[in-house]
Length: 183
Length: 387
Image (cartoon, rainbow over all chains, first blue to last red; front, side, top):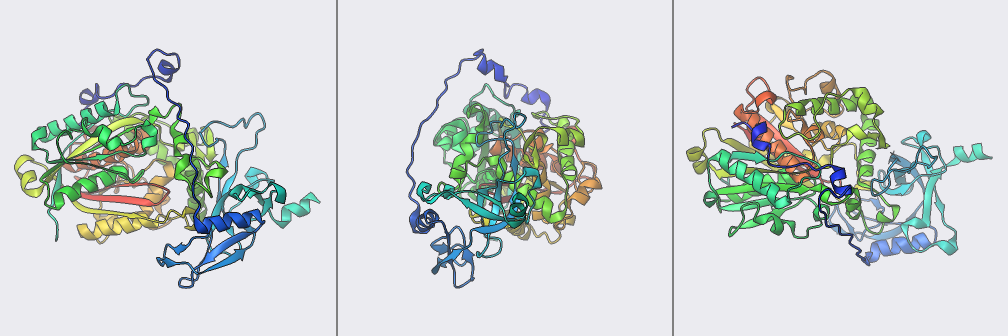
């Protein structure tokens, strides 16, 4: 048996976007508004509380000797409870990054109009085990000058504005070299 | 061996399109009916139904397995839905394989359906909840980022360029010209890819598979049934799947370890020692250009860092020694998530039977592989098939 054009001709009918937007076909739109209140658990709870204090905390596993960030109450590799809290630095290294022209809904940013692309990155945190990173944004740097391996540091919100959230760190910016150039 | 041998004995699929007028159930019906007809069976000869569909958030239909059951011929039958994100399509076939291999059922209708265009105007926003609600969602991430993040790491690790990787889009979209169900076939150039809109560097528009609606289905049968009702059964000789941790920021994304784990399980079961020689044809998951190469390496179809060389040398063309995505892949045929991966299973089924029409690769391949990938860059699903 071969799957032929004739066989599939009537299986699916493609509408055009304008068939929908110009109401050539009937549609029933639904925009759900849902709200959740998520529990963060003891590990992330402490992580957020320490972010509010302007510092980053990790958990250690004495078996594999990893210093884990984000902190977790169990080591997923050793499959046992993690052991101790330990503070790590608020500096790190860019493990990988993106220069995004789209927002979270795939809406286009106005790049031509001068809007700065979003530059999310995985940042390996100094003091945590090698390769242990978090997702955060980079800023105060030309997006096209970002390099994997670049050293960066956290830019914190002022203490009064911190809420115990990952966004208490506004973003990460390049460490020393950029600062020198600025002065 | 604690299980029975299982074969694929029939296949069917709809066209893959954007904004299908048909409902998900109707698409599932078309694919299922075609699969039954191709196997020469009717629904009364089907013992159970396995339904695969990726996130409910696309369709806005909760309990989509139950919703799709009647379109999938599941009325009054044992029906079970399975889900591992983008890996669902190949997992669905593995899931059906379990039902038959276990001895519980002699036949299983495996149906995958997806309507991504119900999340209007774009399904990207429906993905935000895959990220950790406390540590990641406040950063407002989008699905494209995880691909861009992984692609950048992959390029950096091996010194690959965007120009190298763009060739995957050129190859797959060209292959799709010969696929009757294809949504985005075409002759494009590497420069077309590089000059297409920047979505999220290093990902350009033509590095990305489209948003699609569609369905695909296969019929599985135990050996004694397959030999009786089918002249050219294609045997499922190896299955494997694996999940990695959801702490994706703490793994090195340049290499998909979980795909390797899944592949090793499937190869061991199929008695494959040297995959690059014993696998004649493969359909690795290609929702983005670099993923085809990333997965070839994870599947050990080449050494780490050598996939681009195979691409450059034409080895992965339909006429090459190891044709990769001869169907046209997700980049060319389209990407109704779960159905797209069953499309890959169907392609290997047809190729091994010599029934792929204009897409038929030369050299009478007898062993092929289909693979899918998904969740938070953490699942690999692999099926090895032989004629």
